[in-house]
Length: 115
Image (cartoon, rainbow, N blue to C red; front, side):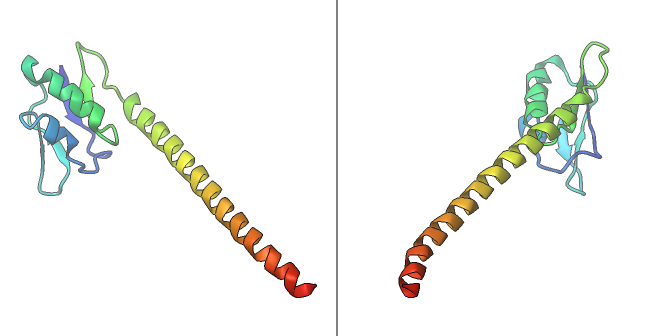
């Protein structure tokens, strides 16, 4: 197994260092770096956990000569994008409901004043 940090993706969340402190550390800029590119087998579960917890997919793992799992960051971006869209839709529904509720409350009063 080989591991590296895609520093162009890293946001310094520190999940990798929390999961595998023997393999990852944050530098003075707050970004993560791999302390070793080839962690011992005993660290592999922690490295996989770190890769799974990284919010931007910056922990790249290569196993047995495979290419870096570069698709992982794209998958994270797609999940993030979908999550943001869901949050946006929910927020718009809440705003629409509140506006409708406010309009419904105002409507009877408006009718009374014009009668």
